[in-house]
Amino acid sequence: MRVGLGVAIGASVLVVAEVLARGQPVPGGTSPLGEAVEGSVLLSGDPWLLWSLRPGDHEEVGVPVHVNTIGMRDRDRGEKRGPRVLAVGDSSVYGFGVRDDEVFTAVLERGAGGAGQGATEWVNAAVPGYSTFQTLNLLDMRGLALAPDLLVVGNLWSDNNFDSFTDRDLLASYAGWQASPSHSLRMELESSGLFRWLDWTLRVAPQRARAHKVGWQVGGDDPRTGTRRVDIGSYAANLEAMCARMYARGGGVVFLLLANREDVEPLSHDPAWAPYRQVMREVAARWGAALAEAPPAFQASGRSADALFLDQMHPTPLGHRILASAVDEALTARGWPERAMTLTKPVSPLVVPADPFEGRGREEPAGNVPGGIR
Image 1 (tube, rainbow, N blue to C red):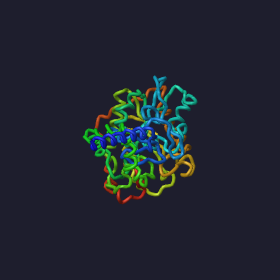
Image 2 (cartoon, one colour):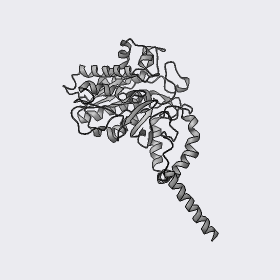
Image 3 (cartoon, helix red, strand yellow):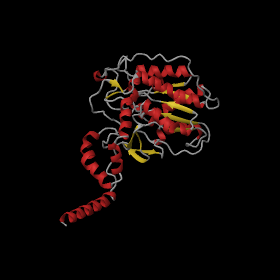
Image 4 (spheres, rainbow, N blue to C red):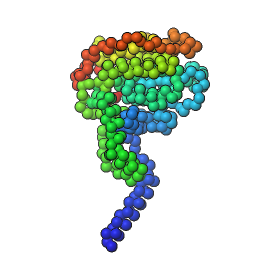
């Protein structure tokens, strides 16, 4: 009798607690590895992408950001009205620290027809911290379904960054975890408001001290392996794979070679990202893709690094306008969109240059950007 009464009382308490917990708002966002996110767009873990943008209206470092229903920093798109451009890359392409209408893709769309209603659509599918591995998965999952006529590829900083993990291994382990019993159990428990509250209180909240950083810095505080997130051979192969996907669709590619603060205020004659930039140039030449080089455009502006960059690499609104001009000039030189931009499939394999910095991540070579995912 007492046992039965105790069970009944316990069950009643759990029911009441569940009802109360469900009535409370979610206490905070989480990064892909369960860390609290402060001051950044909310991100969701994903077994194929590692993380993705959460749809909705958010505030990031004091700037409003809109994420559409398919996880892109863009408005929802319907049927194509004309040529459609899809831009992919990491946080510099996504537009970290600037408003939606200040990102270079929005600038280009307004220039193509005024107030974002022109005949040419510029869709921003870039995500903070994305490497070429993640971008390829994004293209296959939802990007190519938008039927882009042109792909703007701005992947650079995340791939060449030294960190405590490599994308190939992390993607494999994440996908494996999704199939595990612990993942299945967690997915069942996620429907419980009481579980979510307890999970936040006992596991996530104590980690808030580690969360004073942008939300995509997965592993940023852990000992660095000395290796790139994406080795230079995989980087080359992934860029070629993007070209191959657009070639099969009869579309074109523009490689956007991004700039950073050191292009305006040099500190090193041998920066660690130089080999990756060279690979992008060579892949563009092999496939007959257009190449928009941001460094000379930023240098030619005559503006200071502080006027062009919010930090080491994220462009200011002015920087995004310069990016837009660089891309527009590359396209104008090809006569696009009046003249279709197509690719030429290479007949010989790419010879990938050696990476003299691989394995030296702990040394923080001169000119390298330390820390976090970009």
